[in-house]
Length: 256
Ligand code: PGA
Image (cartoon, rainbow, N blue to C red):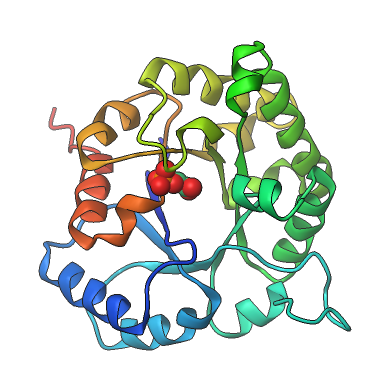
């Protein structure tokens, strides 16, 4: 049985003030038995960690990117080790916005994953196809090649300590969500892809769905056998929406 995982991706949004308000609001909700990670812009990570010390919130903190290099003359870059130093535990890698807007190839994402693992960060590796690729029937081929590149770099065991996120590009920030059936089919293919290398890693790996997840559609997605939680963009900026989504991931107690 895999524990669900719900990850917030704030992207380049928010401010010191909105973060404080988000924390205050989230603290008023009843605690949830679900693992949560808040992936913030670099500059807010340390402050969020400090705020956690004096609040009852049980949320881990993550970054949205890290350098593919260990250290050195790379102006403007932030290394995985620097993130680990300030208490960051997770890092999103290979988000489609980074692949498409900043030219991150599978090789670059793989190098980043190696640095993340070396620094002890848990990677949340994103894969996903464009609308054109889906329409051309290439979805599986695209996501499996993105997955294989990561598996070649860090291996299935290290990946399974983090998470894989399936994010169809056409569903990100568009309001269009993959149907639970569409998403499940890809999640299943991804799990089989990991299983072909390491069946234990495949059985424990959390595969998250991302792309216009909202409190109203989360429960149906999370009910699918191979969907183990979500990577939430826009809706995570509102504490009540993120809470509603996280609530949908709570596995009801089975009383026999
Ligand atoms: P969205 O973004 O929830 O706003 O669609 C998801 C993501 O990009 O991780």
